[in-house]
Image (cartoon, rainbow, N blue to C red; front, side, top):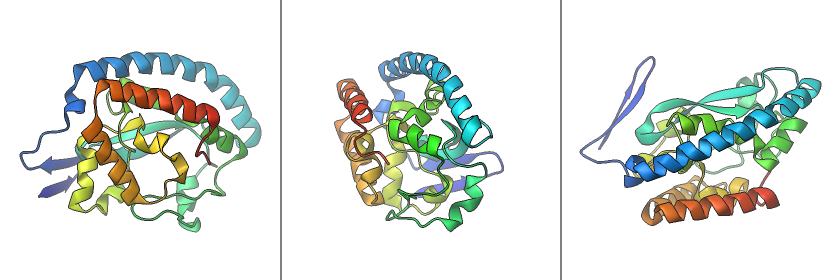
Length: 221
């Protein structure tokens, strides 16, 4: 059984005598993550200036947006993205209809998304700052979709298995539908399938497929 402990600054999950997935302790996978993150951060730095200018013209506010997500075994961390919504969008979430099924939130025509933000999402440029999360070890290049604490709070025991690996910038959901995947159980199925298939070669395969999906804008909002 799973025991969930909440405190002011931490979010800890205890899994009785269950080890994390082998991908989470792989030194080779970590080496690839570090190398990829360094390259990605250089790209993010180059993109930041034009993004900041475009954002300033349409929706003045901070360039970066952070949100609490849950990673390996439920540990909380701050995920970073280029801001794609209006300032204060989180406070307006209750006004937007959730078009997804289960413990996820999606709306293809979310009115909180700016014009610049929609372009960033369609091209996945909004996710470039997440290379920092990869570099510091909160995330991996490839893994599961990182859930929010309120999503995790509603998990059944079977759903927790998806958190036995680090969350990733890409994964099965990214190459198999992206924003078109709107059923949480489908995401869980893909995440568990990834754990069964995992190998360094499979990770590289998913990264290559992700590049193709991003370039063709397949499944993007």
